[in-house]
Length: 197
Image (cartoon, rainbow, N blue to C red):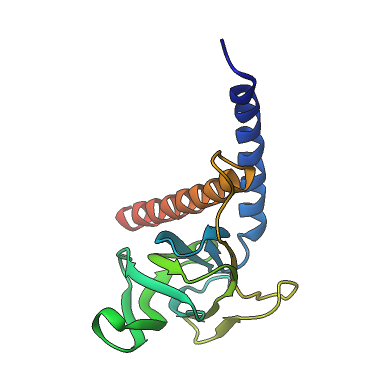
């Protein structure tokens, strides 16, 4: 016998996935950090995606300024990119403040994708500053308000994502993260296939 809780969950998940796809597609024209909602004081995988919007140009450099209280632990390799970190302190006490990726060649309508493990210190809104350089030397500063043409990526950090059960907020966060990772994988696969052709 199927419980009403199972039925409700089976109805909620497709709806949440549809919402996540709409949110992801609406946000696809902007630099973004995902998941959009996460938990404080827990090490989690984050993705930074920056779209190449200029026709006939490529993205060659990305600079990420890390907000205070957002501690990056390690990075997932980004093939084709060289990474340089600026940090205060050293060893176990090093705090990464800025990350620069160079050497990329990401064409129009594709995203530069970078992933890292990080831990937010506490709940609140974390705002990232992203600077994007194109092959013609032009620069886009993703640092404006949400209503601007180049809004700064932000995430919301909660002390927890609910009680003992799975909440809609948890499902949305996981769905958006899964979509971001899927889109990044598709972009990398498509780019690799084009280079082999």
